[in-house]
Image (cartoon, rainbow, N blue to C red; front, side):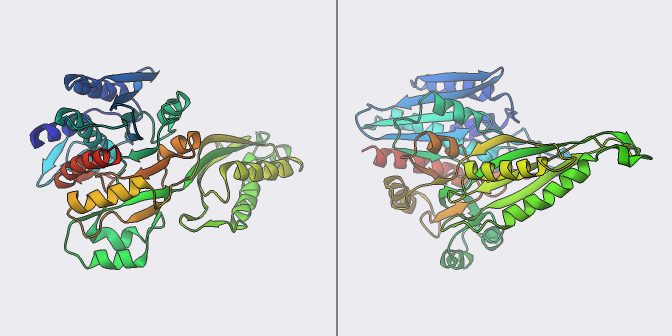
Length: 414
């Protein structure tokens, strides 16, 4: 496939607005693209207008590898912050701009094209290469959960998730001091001395995520007689202080992922200044590690809430809104060795895909939960402009990753 067509596929995907909806349009486009090249696929409907896609090639007589990604994007934010229309692919110099181009439609497109080129080359696929595209990764990982429940990961040996793992070399120092990722100081020192544009990494481990709401129910009263009411805000504040102390008391750490990250980001209560508030709530995200599991954290939180609910005036309720588990894969796994070996050939970068561990989550949480023996890595052409205005990916990385995915599959499935 010529580069003009490869670019056109990515431009088409960026032009489909999939902000937490409308993924069916992406699934249909890719299904039609696969059909054009003789590849059968299955659209897995989930909600109206929202669908996953699964395609597969190979003879089934060997290892089973999957390329995986998501079809949805986050919101574009303030349109005025964009220099180009967010839902139109705009090429400026050697970059292509648009919402979702780096997270992760460039990875999704590159994986789909690699699948097509493997078929058209006549290469022998001694095993199975499965392509999985999901809905709602950004909010719920619901598509990955559904595909897992349907058994699509049960027989897999390895998965490559095409989320962005590139860092412009100019940003390396600030990126690795942002608190959301980790790599060794030698790698950072090597990179900052180079003059090349990008460095891509393999993510072999990332934290899980726990999102929950704590609601406080009080008693309304006129503000002139506050003793007749119970302030839901005051009670939630008291609990919130204790919750902070609880998380401060945790000492568990992981050698690769570090400690638990606790961020109570939403606190809402009250409706008008002359009424005692009878309702308030907070929402919290926790980035989790294996040593202090999601289930264990929920036990701690329930115990704390039960303790407060025994006190006069407290009526608190915990609701778990999302639970995604940490992901860790063996640094010596075959998929990592194959990818690093091919990077020496396909990527013109200072280092051949050094390992990195991050705090952000992926659909891998659902896949590893279903199949704990899975070797799972995150590796994609995008970069650290994900979720920002003026999100971009450089076309050279995109083209190189098509070849890299092709070669990873060819060598893994020999």
